[in-house]
Length: 426
Ligand code: PMP
Image (cartoon, rainbow, N blue to C red; front, side, top):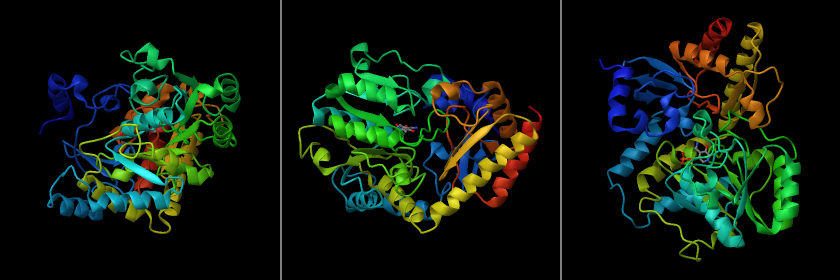
């Protein structure tokens, strides 16, 4: 049997760093990544046959668990009809309609192939619509790897310590203003001097790329008011939170309506799908209706639409999010209790199927500097201790965790029993 180590050695001969996305390389925690053979429900199985309870869920998409029979059936049936046509198909309308129903701020929606494409296109649209160049983002938020957005970003760039990537022209980065998450005052100040040049604000309404940070009361609504006052476009990047923290996303949870929303992850059910949508008046500026160009050979791919639609049908069943939230809450409450018993300082958050835990004395963590001040050493030891016991948490202290509907009470209890032992050993 080939071990993960052997697979990793082989991969590094042909793939930069042996991975096709940096966080997979375990750079944030050290050691070799686990190579996966298959997954079912709440479990991953590595190439050596070891089973893990999975709290990464492909970084968010697998909200109904891996290889859900309904999703697999939809994909198989669609695949037999052909993989891609480069012409419109009815299922694109079905998924678009569902998205518009579940997120009423979205009146028109365009499908793309990834979250990066969604945010990149939304930024272009905001700039084209307002005829302004500057955008505001928040440090520790990650919006994919488009040039304008790789400025003090979160996720893998934080894990690898590369928040400002070489290759992004300074002349482009200078249009991106980066402020502190959860602090409305500096946003007000920037608007008071530069308001007429600001195309828009892009924000993760719950930040999931610097661990998991909830918005403080007044932050999201404050951004909404400023965009209204200055005619700027408010973009909620719900690639992670959309159909994850609630059926209507974080905008429903916090009752703040953005102008544009970017989506990904759950809406593809594990297939490569992203989307951006919002106010009709703004979306009508996109080609072929308007002059702002955006396109894609594989956009709206029928097999990917089938996976997304099947996933949305499952999560739309009444009670789905109540039950999922209970599971996530149970997990985080249990972790905090175990940490307290082991006298390890920890705080944590749970929202819908998304969670975070922080090794810190602080009661709450509201921004990137506070995340960065947490005890990374504890994190690494905890991660590896849990991995050894068959619990697969995100291999970075700068990522959120994910619970799926496939996680059973027994899975959660097994996880907490493992955490009890690992925390006691720190
Ligand atoms: N925005 C957010 C909030 C994300 O979490 C991510 C990916 N983690 C992206 C954008 C980029 O999506 P993708 O990796 O599909 O390009």
